Amino acid sequence: MCQHQPPCPSADSADRESARLAAHHPEQGWSLLCNGVVLFEDTGELLPDGRIIAPQRPRGASLTTA
Image 1 (cartoon, rainbow, N blue to C red):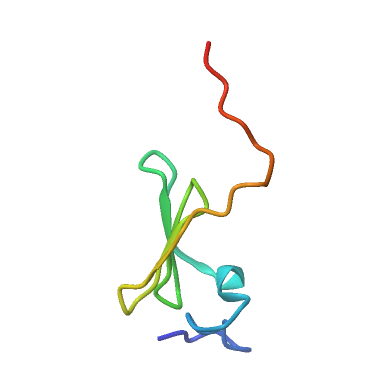
Image 2 (cartoon, rainbow, N blue to C red):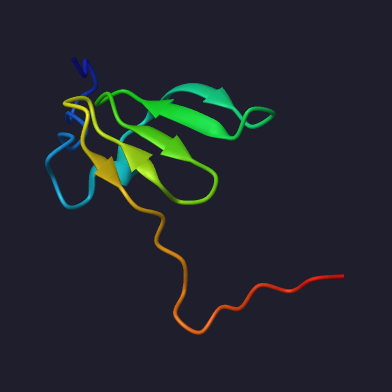
């Protein structure tokens, strides 16, 4: 899928998030990487094979209500 040289990391690679952007939609909260991974602003991911990577929130982070 990736035409870059050197090629971007595959969707199965541990560094998959370092692939180049193919589409960026910050108003909708997601970006598509050239390896087929969809990144969400909450740090969750959707892999091309349908697997879901849960958001990786920092430990100890608490929700604050106003």
